[in-house]
Structures are given as structure tokens and as C-alpha cells.
Image (cartoon, rainbow, N blue to C red; front, side):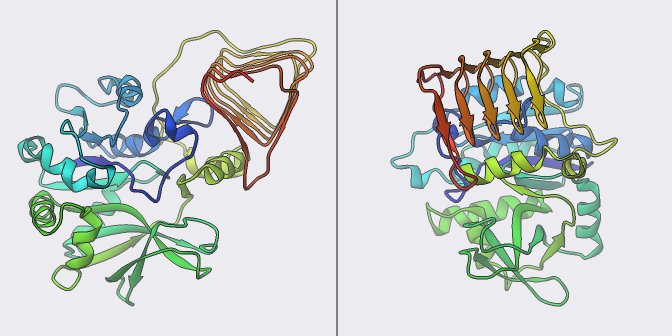
Amino acid sequence: MNALGIICFEGSNAYISGLGDYRPTPAIAFMGRYRVIDFILSNMTNSRIDNVHVYCKEKPRNLIEHLGDGKHYNINSKRGKLRVLYGEKSFATPVYNTDIANYVLNMQYIEEDQNPYVIIAPSYFVYSIDFNEMLKHHLDNKADITMLYTSCSNAKEDCLGCDTLVLDKNHRVNGIDTNRGSYKGRNISMECMVMTKKLFIELVKKASDVSSLYWLKDIIRDSLDELNVVGYAYRGFVACLNNLSEYYKISMELRDPEVSHQLFRPNWPIYTQTNDSCPTMFTETARVTDSMVANGCLVKGTVNGSILSRNVTICEGAVIKDSIILPGAYIGENAKLDHAVVDKYAIVHHVKKLVGTDEAPVYVRRRDRI
């Protein structure tokens, strides 16, 4: 595919509290064995995009370690390359750390790429798509920019703070607004777009000249009267991981095979960094139902409706219900967790009961001991 893939970072509307304190959103563990970025990056590589730029807003170490050289994402190093890019220049305040500022700082890598098109998308929207179909739609409609969107029927609760698209009957974008939960049905922008690399560079330079605080979506909003911007509807499963409650809710929904099969499609693999640890051991006292369990775990207690990541230990007498346990966590004897998110390497053994709700799951900090 003759397009450069750009995985941009999220704006202020997307922040998974607690988990986001220790790593960027793309590097957050998801569904036991994946990271959030694995889904959009797999979409690109499955679509035969060989050159991918990944932009990181802050704390790049975890993301760099996970992505490596890109070989486990099926990127052919002979004709392609995966770059992790971030602003090496320090910003006076976080508000200046925009996608435009980072594109300007790394413009040489964009200009050097030989592909005539760019496909830009953030990682916090999780879905499966063949970008070749989106590019074909873009060319067939002779559009300047094609923006991916999903029709949300519960916008009063879902995708809050995300952009919405105002479309005419020909699916041309006439306006870009913000979902403030005022309407039930909205066309939610997935912040994924296709355009020529030439136009992309022009918009980046124009935005930089207009304001140091501009994002790419701001300059596109300003240019709607000048450009032919069209919407491309996505009809499949979409998850918007823009806060802790949504992260928890989507994770719980994906336990259902009928839901997960919409994301994990046949012949469309989701790549990730493999971990050749030993199989999970279930002892005679273990009771596990309706759960997803990764490899390397030791389970002696009761697990119901939960997600256990790699190398988690559940001691005898412990009861884990409707919870997410991230890699390396240790749940001690007789501990009771209900609607909890336990971060990596945390130890829960003195506190005997932690109970949250669907809207406000209990969060246990990384490497904490409670």
C-alpha cells in the first residue's frame, strides 16, 4: 500500500487515570496479552503499510520497549521501517505539546518518505479495518481528506469529549464539534484520516503559522470551506478507551466471544510482542469461570468474570470477581476483589476486600503494596 502510516498521540480528551500515570496510553496493557497500540498498528501492517511512524507524547520508554524494531508486527525491514518519534525539545507547558509541534520537529522523516499518501490515526480507538478500502473510497470520491467515523447511538455516555462530525447528505464534513453528552445519537470521529502527503505537510506548516497551540484537527476545521473533506462510515466494533471506566467496560464486554469475534477477525491477526513463559498452572483449589487468563499465571483461588494478564499469582482463598489484573500482580490469601483494576507488580495481601462499580472501578497503583 502506497501510504505512510502515522499513529498520532491522543489529546486531552483521552486519559486513562491511574494507568496513564506510568506509561503513555498506547503502551497500556489490554485484554491480558496486548497493548492498546497493537490494534491500530496491526491494522496498518495487515493493510500492507510498511512504513509507520509512532508518535509518543511522553514517557516513551515502555512504548519503545514494547514495539522494538517492529518485526513482531510483520513489518518487512528490507522495504519498511517502524519509527518511534517524540518531541526531543522540551515544552514550556504540556499545552504546547501538540501533534503539530511534534510533526514539525520530525518533519525530515515525513518528507523523506516516498509514499504519496498518509493514513493518520490514534491508538485509543480500537477496531479492525482494512485501510485499502478506506483509501479506495478516498480516491473514488476525489476527496482532499477522508475522515473515519462511527455512528454512536449512546453518545450521552460513550465517547465523551471526542470529536463529532456534521455531515450533509453526500457525507461531506461541514463541521467538527465536541461530544458533550447532549445528544443520544452522534457521528463520532475516530480521528483517523487519509490525505496526500503533500496536503498533510501543507496543513502542518499552516497550523504552525496560525497558532502554537493548534492541533491537526483545528486546522482542518478552519479549512472545511476550502477542502473537500468527506466522512467514511465504519460499521464494525469500535472501542473508545478514553478513560478508566471505558477501559474497564470495554474489557468486560470483550470477555463475550460474540463481541470479541467482531474485533479478533479470522485472517486479520492482532500482533503483539510474544512472551514465551510457561503455561498457566491451576491447582486443585482453583475455580475459574467466564474469565480470560494469559500464560505464566499461578491460580489457586477463585476467579470469576475477570481478566488475568501474564504472570499473575492468585493465592488460595482469594476471590477475584469482575476485575482486571495486569502483569506480575500478586493477590494474597483470602483477598477479595470486586470491580478492581490492579496495575503491574502490585501486591494485595493485607487489605482483605476491595469493591468498586462499573462506573468507578477500584484502581490499585503500579508496584503498590496494600
